Length: 603
Ligand SMILES: Cc1cc2nc3c(=O)[nH]c(=O)nc-3n(C[C@H](O)[C@H](O)[C@H](O)COP(=O)(O)OP(=O)(O)OC[C@H]3O[C@@H](n4cnc5c(N)ncnc54)[C@H](O)[C@@H]3O)c2cc1C
Image 1: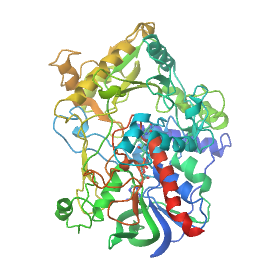
Image 2 (image 1 turned 90 degrees about the horizontal axis):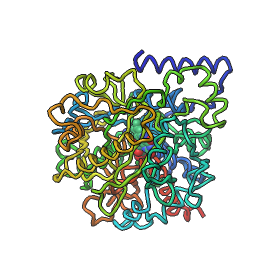
Image 3 (image 1 turned 180 degrees about the horizontal axis):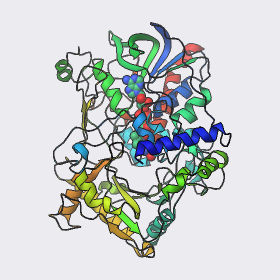
Image 4 (image 1 turned 90 degrees about the vertical axis):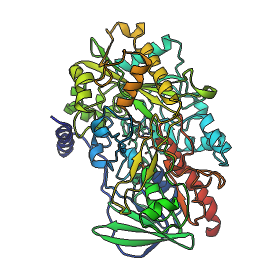
C-alpha cells in the first residue's frame, strides 16, 4: 500500500470503530456563520496556528472584545489527534512549500527541492508536527533581550512557558515547569531502542536531564504535547475549549489576501472565501499569525517590504522594511541509519490493529507503554550536545532518534529522496529493523530568504533555504562533528548486544569519497540534508535601528499602526529548540501585551 492508501485504511478504521461504539472521539465540527462583507471586529487574527491559537484562547477571555479569526485551512483530519498517524496526514493539511533549487544543496532529494511543510488548518503546524515539546534555553531568550527587545529575557518569558503547560512527567525539573496550563505534556510511546539510546549516552557520560529545565545539555526521553495520549494541538487544547465563546467568530477555508492600510494604519483585511473577495474591518488591531512563510508573504502583498522588490511586482510600497530577508531554520541530516538483529525499533504493523486504536482512545491516560499509536513520529529519545566547534559553549547539535526509516522515494512522502539515492542508501534495508539518528544543527550561520514569486496571493512565494552557504563552511564542520558524535553513541558497547550496524553508508553521488572522511560527510550533507520545519526570523523582532528588524519588542510592525505579527517569524535568532512551544509562548505573551495596551479603555 502506498502512503495515501494506508492513511485511508487507518481513517476507515477510526470511522468504523466510532460507528460501532468501540471508540469515542471527542470532536464536534466548527459551525460557520453567514458571511457578510464589511463586518467590524475589535481584533482580526490572521491564521490559527500555534501562536494564533494561543491568542484566540487568551484574547477571547475578554468578553467585551469581538474577535474574528481567519484561517486558510479547514478542520483537523480524523487522524490528526493520533500521534503515530498524524504526521503522515500532512499532505492534506500542508501548504506544500518546497525550497527553490540552490547550488550544491539537496543533491539527493527529488527535484533538488527541500520540503518545507507548513500546517494549513485549524491549529496550523501544531496539527501536523512531531509534537516534541522543547522550549529553548536561558541564553536564547537573554540574547533576545540583549538585541534590544525588553521583556523577552529568560526570566521574563519563563512565566509564560509555565503558564501554557500542564506537565505530567514523572521526571521534571520542578521549579521550571508549569502544571495548570492548557498544553499538556506527556511521555510518548517508547521503544527498546529509545531506552538503549538513553543508556548508551549515559554510559558515555551524558547526564539524564529535563531539557525544559535548568539545562538542556544531556540525554532524555522525548517530551510531547499529548493529552491523554492524543495530540494536544493548538486546535484541541487552546481553541476547542473556548470555541463557543460568543465574542469569537472563526472562519475556516478563508484566505487573507492583504492587509488594508491607510495613512500608515492597518484598518482591516481583504480575504477570499467561496469564490469571492470580502473585507473585514478591525477597530483595534490586525494581528498576523500566518507563520514564518505566510506572514512575510502577506506583508509583502500589502506593500510592506523592500521597495525594489515590491515595485518589481507592481505593488505600491507603503513601508520599506527587510521582510523575509533572513530566514533561519534548523537543517537536519537523515543519513545516519542503523540496523539491529532484533526488533528494538518500532513495529509499524501494530499501528493498524483495532486493539491499538481502542487502547489509545479508551485508555490513553493508562500506562505509558500501552500502545504504538502514542508514538510521536517514532521519535522517543533525544540528546542536546555541544561540539568542539560551538562558540561560547552553546548547545549546537541535537540528536533525535527515530525508530524507522525516514526517507522514501514516494511522491506523497514528507522527505523524498531521488531514485538513485534511495536505491543506494535506503532500499536495501527496507525490510530490516532500523533506526535513524537525525542530526540537527541548532545554530547554523547560514540563512535563507523568502521573496514573492508573484503578486497573486495564491501563488507560493520563493523560499531559499540557504543551508551550508556560510563562507567558512562552519555549518558543514559542525554537522560533521555532530555526525561523528552520533556514530560514537550508536556504535558504543551498549548497542552492541543488538548487533548494531551502520547501513546505507555510501550514498550514490558520494562514492568517490572515502567513507567517514570530511569530504564524504560534506558530500552526504549536501545530498540528504533537509529542513526540521523550524522557519524563524522572517519578520524579525528588534529595535528600529536594527536594519534586519521588521517588528518591535511588542511585535508591532515598525512604522505602521495597529498591526502586529505574532508567530515564529518574529524570533530574532536561531533557537536551541524546536519552535512549536516558543510559538505558543509568543502567542501567550502577545495576548498579555495587547491586554495591557487596551484594557484601560474597558474600565
Ligand atoms: C512536519 C513538521 C514537524 C514539526 N515538528 C515539530 C516538533 O516536533 N516540535 C516543535 O516544537 N515544532 C515542530 N515543528 C514546528 C512547529 O510546528 C512550528 O514552528 C509552529 O507550529 C509555528 O507556529 P506559527 O504560529 O508560527 O505558524 P503555524 O502554526 O504554521 O500557523 C500559521 C497559520 O496561518 C494560516 N495561514 C497562513 N496564511 C494564511 C492566509 N493567507 N490566510 C489565512 N490563514 C493563513 C495557516 O494555515 C496556519 O494555520 C514542526 C513543523 C512541521 C511542519
